[in-house]
Length: 249
Image 1 (cartoon, one colour):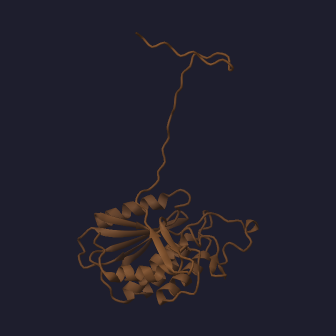
Image 2 (cartoon, one colour):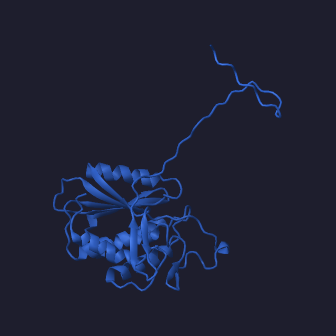
Image 3 (cartoon, one colour):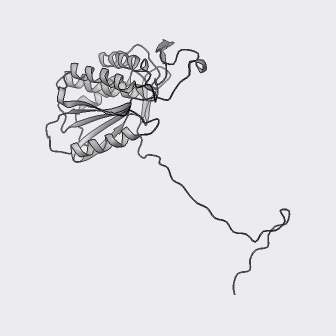
């Protein structure tokens, strides 16, 4: 991994203190943490569920924040795809020709019916140090932490060893069409990706005193497979065990 420097690790640590587990929202101690909480509240309030056409709305707000933090207009792109889409942001490094690091998250959430919730699912509410709302854990917390960390580093003038590409997909919970398109776009633009950090896997944990205790990193991904099993038997009465077929001499 060539994402070097203490700056990145320190920035991630200061923002991760916001929520680990992600739904926790005790008063952040750092500006980056407070910004991550603000982004999270804003993101939860936008119902980015299938059919509501709200992913572009959230993407526009994230893009505006990235531009305000110092990203150039041509470094941040939203690609519409049906009623959703994906957001790409490129953070230029010192070696522009080197393989890039991609950091990914998703902007969409599973549908939530207000009658099934004690609180309105798309009204972020902080109670007893926790933020309640659809997506506060999966995956808008990770999305907000990544965005806030990159904004902090860009404002401070940090330059990574090589380019970092942020990729925020828009239908991970449903069709995953934007995920596939986003992956192709990242590879096409970057040429080679040597590391992918996924904000939707692993995660942080706080100890009893509320201090960051451990951060887990996913090393493999689950996938889907179909298996066909065929059994043969001579049949017979269900209460009588079938006799084994004699083996040939």
